[in-house]
Image (cartoon, rainbow, N blue to C red; front, side):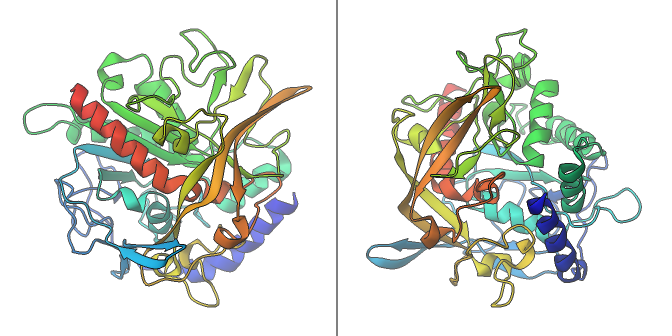
Length: 422
């Protein structure tokens, strides 16, 4: 309850700064879907043309008010600082379909039924998947999500969350993308990476069940599904349900396993918690289903084909004040409501990279009435994150950042595997 009340207070304090942002509305597609990012639309916030080429060099993104954010990277290492360009040299061979987590402070839309792009929605997209903009065409639908105060209220009262129209928006956007954008000029289907976090992961879990799992025509196009901070549940002895397991999130789409090359068409899922802060019952990492556990796939172990139980160095990439348009008073800028307890690095680039400072390993702990499974984060958390996280949510808002460099590398490998197989 304490965490929920803090979220409500943070949301109220942040509404003033967020409400003054003007929105540039992307044009409707053939079915009326509203997009946060879509390659080729006028003033695409992700600044990609229809083929995925960046509109500026070096690469930038465009906030709804027209201001720009750099996507370059500063590496923080033992030898000092080094800046890197955030662009890619080749046209993306695959697509990304991203569903953002809970960031809305008030319903989107406030009135009517047509969502409008907001600065905080783009900010969280950039923070979590911005480094992928040079690696895939980015499709990110707007949806009418449950807000931060609504989810805090659900946490306090114990009522069911995600009861609004948001998940239907995501499914409709997927159907639009599949019908109009996944088919190339020659009629060939494109590979697609699904990317979600928190509420966005829960929406994509439903999408996979309804549109992909057990359907060969769509399963064949799945490069990877990155579902962080959600509730992907698997049997203790298998990586998917097998066809008739009501407690398994998916029946046929498996978890990714460490092998060379990294397999495509599988799920990467975890919730991150700091070492020494193991999750308990009712946390995101907890399963009460007998014979099942919450999924944990360490992307660094995938990248280096390491044994999952071995602690591996992580390639951590965090957003900077520059990316989030923060300042000394509100370093996290547009994400002040969700990153208020985190250290936000200051750099002229959009991201700060901390290779090998943090470590990760998947942990499992059975209990009397369930079990917990999570990605345990060790190393100098204070230097990188400035916090060990919340007792219930752990390092939830940094789920992507703690291993973002590893995720990008793994998704590149999976894309290469998928393209070679095609």
